[in-house]
Image (cartoon, rainbow, N blue to C red; front, side):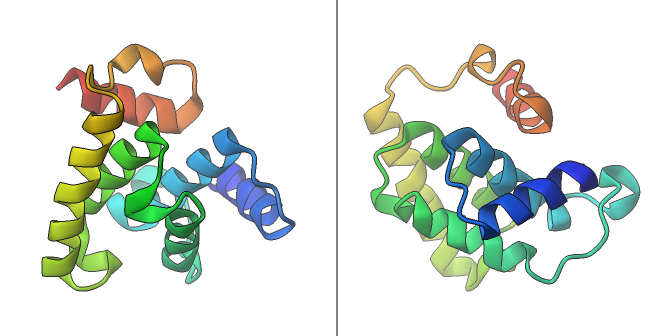
Length: 130
């Protein structure tokens, strides 16, 4: 994960806004606090939280028209709202993210849509199977 994260982070900082790259970086930024380093193999990056927020804003946050982004952002924020800012505020945002994602994609987010998409895909396919 570390190598992918560093490559995607550097690419982001150079202006790469390819949707798939950005979603991968969004996930890997989040993994800095979602799992311990002995699981992820990633070293601490003080910018990880800031990058997560930059990407959240890049997609349009709660007003995004990208259902998949809304879905994964909602799940990440649901699991660790206190890392993102005010916990109560983020739990409220989570509800809106989930509602908007299903408004845009009423049939939900099956595991198959994430398969073959690296660590990001493995994680969210696993979540979809729960």
